[in-house]
Image (tube, rainbow, N blue to C red; front, side):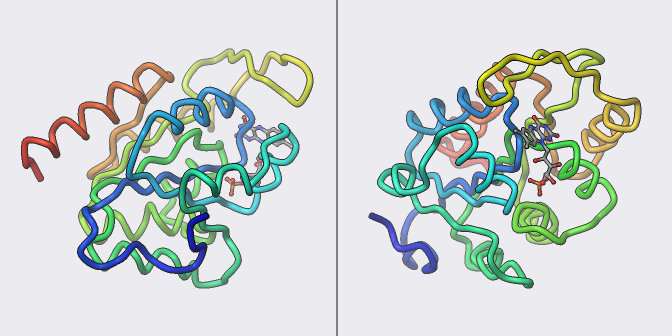
Length: 192
Ligand SMILES: Cc1cc2nc3c(=O)[nH]c(=O)nc-3n(C[C@H](O)[C@H](O)[C@H](O)COP(=O)(O)O)c2cc1C
């Protein structure tokens, strides 16, 4: 089991910081994908921790495979790890409407929105897989499938996020995986 409050050790190769928000949409696929990746630390919003439980995923099982940091402090203490060159990239996925709206507005009052703000200030690139990219989405609620209609404000926020500096927005799950793999391949050839 990984320590839950310590940063990665100094001298470790830079890692991927993955922010998980309170989204049921694409949660199962995201967790399956995370199983295939090495060098990832997971950062949860308070809503993400609740959603994981609602969809039947235990934190202990996740912690067997990776460091999991929870949103338990007003100042988002784990965000300080970004200052120590421990992370080369931030991925937020899936990103709720709430998190996307806050990122666009420059609000940082959760662990994940703080990561996004501080990644920007540290010039660490972010990849965001937004929940709201289409006028109609088929989504998984606990125990059933639902059709959702993201509002114009949600779609507009996603479009605005794509124009933020150092930010790549993935509009679907395949694009998320392609963006992550492209970034990891780029790092293997020493790009910045
Ligand atoms: C079962 C369940 C599923 C949810 N799925 C989504 C979702 O797919 N997308 C979304 O934007 N919000 C979803 N929400 C609402 C968010 O969890 C809620 O807006 C929360 O405040 C987001 O906080 P965060 O952005 O800090 O994680 C869901 C809520 C519940 C109870």
